[in-house]
Length: 155
Image (cartoon, rainbow, N blue to C red):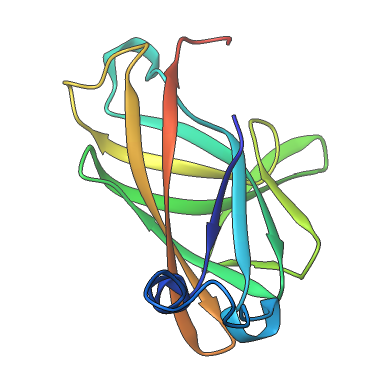
């Protein structure tokens, strides 16, 4: 499922209240447009309250930086990189990921990803969890709510 969201809702409101002949704002006037697919939260292993998650993010119409994530169902969400050095996996928490106009950012198992702590015990496989993503678009704050499917181990 692909979801797309425009940055400046004020333009959508203004367009709805104006005549059909009024000019529509260009992408440069409305700012970046974000879309996502494949948002997920993995079932915690062994009844623990921590897990991983991910999403595929795309942007058009401007550059953005993913600077944070939060959810009512998850106490803390951190952004992590993953690399292999000397035959060992190394995860590092980072303060954000840059996403240039026209690019895609993959947060996935085995690569850059979300680490999630204090996952609510109410969250079960098959559920959907809303996650709020926070972006910086050249000094302007943006948010995107994604719907992440809770998947069983190995899915």
